[in-house]
Length: 382
Figure (spheres, rainbow, N blue to C red):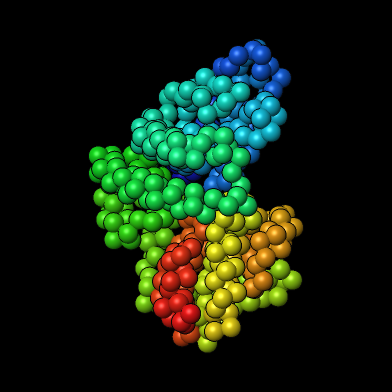
């Protein structure tokens, strides 16, 4: 009888624990103007694989998802998307199950106000100065070239290259300032999920030693999450793709489905170029790569393009190849940021490239525009 009671107690305990885990959820409750009644608010999260929507009724809405760990949930407004023919998603950082309250502006979702999400508040404290700096950069561009000119700017414009160069010089200063702020933030909030999330999302461009130092300063609370594993993976990938290392080999299908290896190109200088059809900075850089290819291909230089396009978007990828006159080999598994080569190389932003010598050794990283031409001239001559 005693054994039976113990067994029943164990089963009851397991069932209680299972029910508790099932009950853990995040509920986003909100209010908005009743003029938006009947319109939908869409939630998605690529990390947790959540995708859902809710219709506004009487100026209120509520949408729940199972809590699968700390993450950032993205929202967009159906009303805004229809009115503006596009939208900018609005993210909310959540580090624990419970209720998050939103005062939503469905015409401009970015103007919404969130309560009861402490890590989201911390995250916003960090990004706000960066947002202000971005506005200041935009103001400087408008002041120099005119707001109307900037509004209508396309990559076919004769001043496009000049404007991009000026923008990149302004942005480089801001990225340096952001790096200093990020270090201070992590050291001040080592136990916050916001610190880990920022370290993961802003890893690109950070010296690997600095990233490892900041990661080691984080508390243990979130070290078992996928975000922590991503940071560790990026640190390792950055170390194995440093200048002087042999470029890690990989194999991906080209546009016709034929498998291509990076090592197939040994004996040539190779620019391993990560890009995507949807990436406007990539498309802006493509003419520079085309120019370099045309000038140096006959001297033993080639390019291998790795696209981070998505499943179901192969036509967009191929269309961009033709539009941008990319005549070299292109490969992709159409797996977006989970592209096998991108994961191997720790790619967190694009465009990004690696210049590889004839023996397969990395000799330069992120050489673009004039810097790429200068490097190739140094190696192969004019």
